[in-house]
Length: 257
Image (cartoon, rainbow, N blue to C red; front, side, top):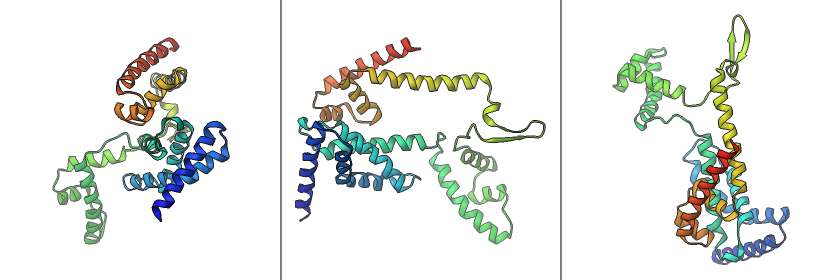
């Protein structure tokens, strides 16, 4: 029974994809999303236990990858849509998690010690009837006081501080962190934003197949072999397009600077 349902789902998906390829519409795309939403749920289930993001957020992000796959699927290639869509869904989620992830990487040993410290702190609070000192926590963890201070500092600095964070000044009143950033650093920040805009503009100007190759390899983390299979071209062609695409991007970025 399950095999029959799966077969019917694939058949209906392929038929709708053919129709969407000829006459794209929001209604057809939404129907395709509904039919293949299980692919998104599967990827979201895989990642939800490996991050702090909610299942609902991962579903929304994965759905964007599914929509991207629907819009880029070529029915003439003969590929299975599910095999084509999963890298897009997975890539969208991974890209989202990278952007949301902490810029400070904490060593595994410190992560384990921090977890132990939470339990130790609760136990000491009950035993001492007060908040334990850092020295007492470090002693139970059997590490130096300085190392425990470094661990605490690393966890405090995990998340980047917003430039809009309010700073209280007795003379000037309330201001924001962004107002205190030196001009040189702010200028560097502006340049980084401008570079991203130039890169996006340059990417759009590339020939479609070359752009697709670069997106598969660098955005969705596929190997050149996997990219070749998805696009129905040889691995050698993928390698050449990667080199050519990067060279053209560099040239356009320099020209636009």
